Image (cartoon, rainbow, N blue to C red; front, side):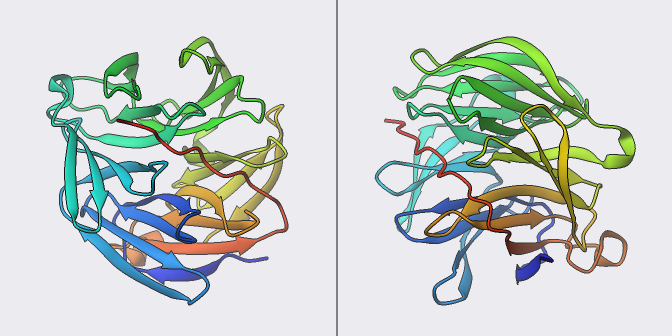
Length: 284
């Protein structure tokens, strides 16, 4: 099945699709323009629902609002009536921004940042009491994260090094250890970007400048590759009532002549493969 274009807001960096099970809607962002959108499959309607500061990623809180991870290390709670600040700034990230984030089974959030001319990127963990701890440094571009089916391992992408790493993960403490390479991608396959794990434990990796989405077995063997009419395939998630709907974001909507006719659009597929719900964040 070929990907179907659902919405095209010509996103410069379309990213972070996430299914909201309470609303039965999909949310996604355009990072550079600080825009957020949502799509309601039952009605076919989609809309822009936020415009403001840069949003690099977000999670869904267990009571429904969205937790936005923004520029300068800021974290804010978004409801229809506005924003509430959780963290105003991380001093070390005053010239950077968050990029990709994921809630863990306990409601913590693993959240990565971009590198700048002055310092590399990092991976942080935001605990449920609102404290933020740096876990990793010397990261080129912190990107896609996902938990194994048994919640014992964390997959983590550094796009700059074209590598998806694997860590042992302790749900009780939120600690990660035993860093090793899950897979390293050759340059011609593009940069590994957003990531998700399906119900069979297979890993889906979006390919920036690779024009495709790749599904890998838990052993790191390519299972299938799906091409898109956009060079910069940025992120993927599962959704729908049975989590067999696949939603994929793309970037480059400001330069479709070079980036592809579908650049900056949101795409949908249903291959009969079931995904898993993402965890809710529980940040107080």
